[in-house]
Image (tube, rainbow, N blue to C red; front, side, top):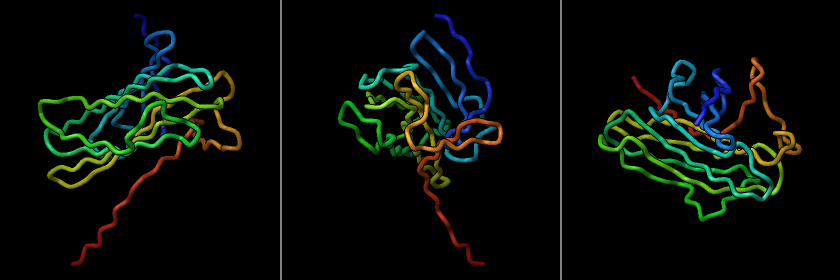
Length: 181
């Protein structure tokens, strides 16, 4: 299996940096591991994923995601959302919980999705880790390419960073705490 590096720069998708490689002709692998210098502080969660390079309109894409953490105890909660035009081929739980243990290194998620129109779609994960030092969150996104046409949806404006990278906007949650002296 020949691996060819496509991208070795920081991509800012929902505040997440990923390295993408092509493992087989039709499978793309991505990871957030190794890009700590580009990531905003948040939950100590990394992601590795496999997704088809492209699928046809109405074709089902199988997307596999593995979440890893350096924590030995606690609880991880994952809120999952699909872009509006991306549909799940199976019944999907939009919130999943995992008990973190020192024995388990990977927490896996699998999705089968499709779209009725060409475009670039995202499976978005908002991860929250509860551990002894409180709750921390991290937003992650996995791309799904449908069709051979342009990679943006009709009527949608894709934001660009100063370096020209596409930016995807994801759901986030903020907690404000008032500290009294």
